[in-house]
Picture (tube, one colour):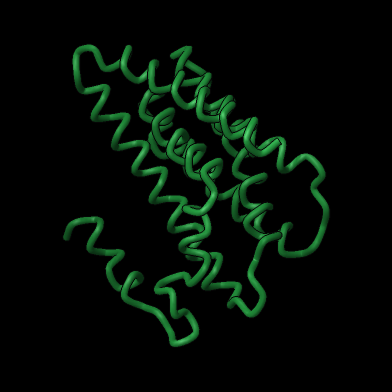
Length: 187
């Protein structure tokens, strides 16, 4: 069985309260913020660039920390630097891709975990009224993982080309530029 087919039952499962499909508003939420989307795709691309165990460990650290951050966000606790960390995450991930240096796996995982916590906090704090928390959280996590896979696949495809490392580094510069553009537009 292909790995993607194993998720098919989850994608088909939706109750009447989740009229927006699997995950309700949670499924779409990560797609509505360009800062979130850019950072999540960059996590996957950076993982591809790092290679080896980082292919799964770095995105997993992000998603696990995002789960924790989401719970904190839903609890109503304040995390004062969450928004600046979110804005910085795309820029710093772009910089990591652009400089193309080998980072120790624990450092890469810790950095993405910090970013994931901040992103999760924002998603949890923005939980729509009347949402089923479990469905919303599942939707956010599935979409986030999907964006990581998208960045990872794109990164691996780029790296398969003989000039791929240079092209991926250039895409890191693009992520930095987009991140600064978002920073200017929001601030």
